[in-house]
Length: 396
Ligand code: PMP
Ligand code: GLU
Image (cartoon, rainbow, N blue to C red):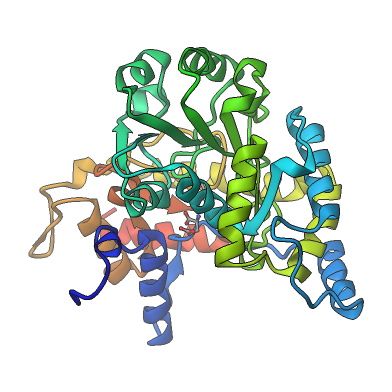
């Protein structure tokens, strides 16, 4: 690595989700028929009325910089959405719209973290949390979990990891990569701990909120005693299948929203103006209009669960949300494929990519070496074909 690069940059790794997806694309470009189950990206089109609104915005001349935090009409709409879907009251001054939830999270971390601050992250976690914290020269403190608790933490665990250096806590519910969803009761118990530690700020990443299969999603900011400690993160990438439009947003205490506005003003100026106009119309609809996508994801989840059961070495829990399966694959470690030993989940993921032409992501990237992430945001026929190939390679 070039030693002129910053230490901060050298300290982090490439996004493994995007790296795997790049490998899959490269193989595809070489003419291989690759099934990409690596990326968390819905394969639907955004709703038509959203597309129409974007065209209208172009015709009406929304070609210019917007206010740094986003159009006031969009921030007002986000406040309505938070109230309607999550029971949360925010004022537009507490909302910042950014270039994807990824930028929303980075804005917050850059606003709040000093060198050596501690950030508690339950594992498995979404790839970028850990790396972004390191990029800010703070220390990620990981709470490991297992399948026995559906990869969720309890208040006793949380308590053990809090120190005087703890500044933030980051988690996602529904969770990427496990698909776990925290219940009201579970969140209430965690909220009690945070209440006793009022200096800790909670980043609640709710980007999969609508993709819930059993219980309704609950926002941790809805526990009134800790509302002022919580930053609620959301975006249009997953619920509206608008990954490339790059719209994310936060609801936060005003002082944090202001600091994110300050950073954003120096980095990107604002999120894309056309996508912001379209986002207003997207957020007008309540979640029942998205039912068709959720039903499809549920059908795919059930399908993939049935298919994976045919390979008993894959140990899985039933995910209650998002669109990932996160099986424990440690039974394969130490076994051989032809003359190659599978030592870890990275070896297995590479084997599946090169021999079955199915792209997945090793659990390492998500803080669990024994697991593998398989995205089922793909068509049923792709999922069926992928498992046919995986079974063949693994000798079933
Ligand atoms: N949080 C989680 C948990 C995610 O899975 C993603 C995936 N893209 C993001 C945040 C970032 O979303 P985006 O930047 O596309 O809004
Ligand atoms: N969030 C998606 C994933 O986990 C998209 C890729 C990324 O942003 O890391 O696959």
